[in-house]
Image (cartoon, rainbow, N blue to C red; front, side, top):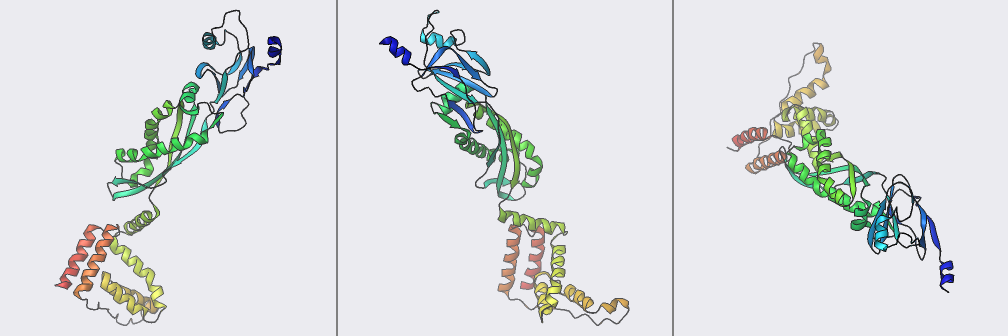
Amino acid sequence: MALMDFIKKQFIDIIQWTEDDEETMAWRFPMAEFEIQYGASLTVRESQMAVFVNEGKVADVFGPGMHKLTTQTLPVLTYLQNWDKLFESPFKSDVYFFSTRQKIDRKWGTPNPVTIRDKDFGMVRLRAFGIYAFHLVDPKLFHTTISGTLERYTSEQLEGQLRNTIVGHIADIFGESGLPFIDMASNQVEFGNALKAKMDPMFAGYGLALDSLNVQNISLPEELQAMLDKRIGVNMMGGMGEYTRFQTAEAIPLAAQNEGGLAGLGAGVGVGFGVGQQVAASMAQSLNPQGAAGAAVPPVPTFSAPPQSADEILATIEKLHGMVGKGILSQAEFDAKKAELMKRLA
């Protein structure tokens, strides 16, 4: 009867894994009730490693190559099984294969803006995005800390943890750099290197190696970016005065198309920025181009700003102060305009 039971047993004489996808990191060889034949062949391909687990403990680890499973190639397992040198019976162990191929083009990014203190803008909120690559280097550590006895473990199951840990350190990197937002774009490589240095120990603790980590983009949320673009536009025009004159010139053609539009434009600009006369002069010249050829040019009418009440003047000062907070006006420009308006109030 014992002999019949022995004959009915099914033995495994070839153990191998042909990877069928790019995401599987750990795969358990299907054993069921099978036993491994003594002297069986274990094939571990390049970019793979194999681990034998006996009664819940990692017994032996094999690198790439073809291995004959004997007492000579399984020294730890042989010791655990207490095999005699002449005892060559089948044995049972769980065999796990691990992929050591590099996982590339893994995305990371801040789901919500990170708030930091900026030298130029005070408190700002930043977003950051990038990619990273890693691979498995220690299958025994990965097995005991991550994949365990699961039949299959994929990189998708792990990436949430890796990505969120990277994002959790990005605020520290920005804060420690002390760089203003304007200078961050030119230091993205340095940010990536610093972030990688912080993440290396965490990856190593999982049996992984972080091969690269890149910061591809650092940006402001849309509403803050719009304010920055406006401020850049003002600076490119040479300050608030030049910016106002540019806006006025842009508005003249539109005002000329509407009856009464020019008078309203001149009065409105005169109240806010004192350039009503410039508008009228420019419009008069555009309406009488022969003046440049020597024709008599009629006197240019001047627009005087309508009188303002004390409440209107205070409201104007308050609006100008709000423009300082948004970065549209500088503090010096605001102080000058405020002094002018306060004279009217007096």
